[in-house]
Length: 171
Image (cartoon, rainbow, N blue to C red; front, top):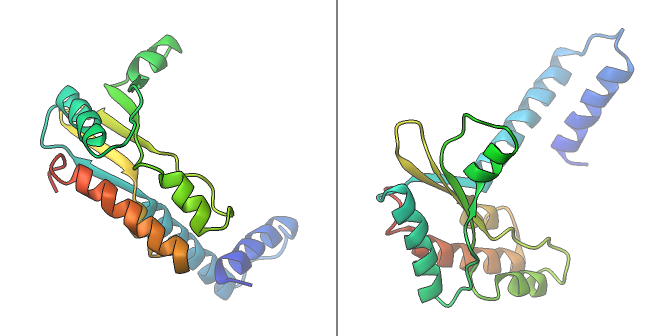
């Protein structure tokens, strides 16, 4: 059983035996597992400032995806959606459906149907200071956590996405 699974079992046992204090070793294992989980979560999401303004970033992603043969969908105005739900203090945010051509078919084939489909979503949001940011899944880093055909396929898809975003993002 992996260290993370053992640490999670330790957490569960702490709740079941609340009268017992965890040992220093148990606390250390839980802290290590939580640090690894946070590292994994950070590696899954990629956030970069855009070289462009908000609307220009949305347009550049859409146009760049089309030029690469992707079939990007229409951007979803999340700010309008959140405001319609009563959330007043929200900045501009749009979610764009965009994925390299046949990406999910390639992932399904490489994983023999065992990997979940990619979300194929890119979020462009504006910070309080008016700067546009691009947020997406970091497939390049996620591929490093995988093995075999799936790792190679995810790395290839990640490289395709990286090529799209490189001229748009500032770093």
